[in-house]
Amino acid sequence: MWRNRGPSALGRSYAYNLSVLYELPAGPGRGHFESGPASWVLGGWQLGTILSLQSGPWATTASNPNLARAGGAYRGNLVGNPNLPESERDSKAWYNLAAFEQGPDGQHGNVGRGILELAGFKNVDLLLSKYFAMPWEGHRLQFRFEAFNLTNTPHLGKPGLNGLSVINTNGTAQQNWINLADQPRIIQFALKYNF
Image (cartoon, rainbow, N blue to C red; front, side):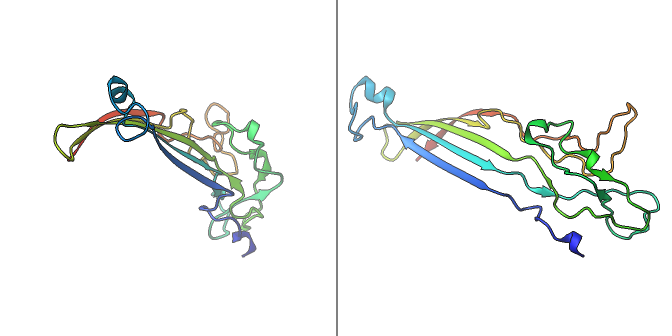
């Protein structure tokens, strides 16, 4: 059926990842501050980051009206653009509920597969680490500072995908709400002994 042709749930318009690790040119054998207190303070530091940018995946709406008698997933009829402009999207209204209407019983409706673009993903992780030489050959102590989701950007989950709105007891439609999000910023410190 032509309505089942559309973007995959795994499809994305773009996905970009950048990983950088920089070691300060200070300390023994590094060309700057090779000895003395400055070598001990500035030497052995590494700075790293991972940047991830991805557009949102695609999702399909569905509804389960009583007595549809259509067999399989019922999607209703599309009467407008279901994707709101990015400036109007938030966790209480991710897509345009007015773009859907109930179709006649016994018919699937004209809503296709993969018509809703879900939330994208923007993330920056940071690493700051320093090696300390130990008195034994081949032994080092590493101090690590790591921040995951450094900018504390919300990573939203999926909205409810029932395009034909269900009204809650307060009289508001909640089928396009997003009720889940991924972890907020996580910061951790660690000591690692290499031998």
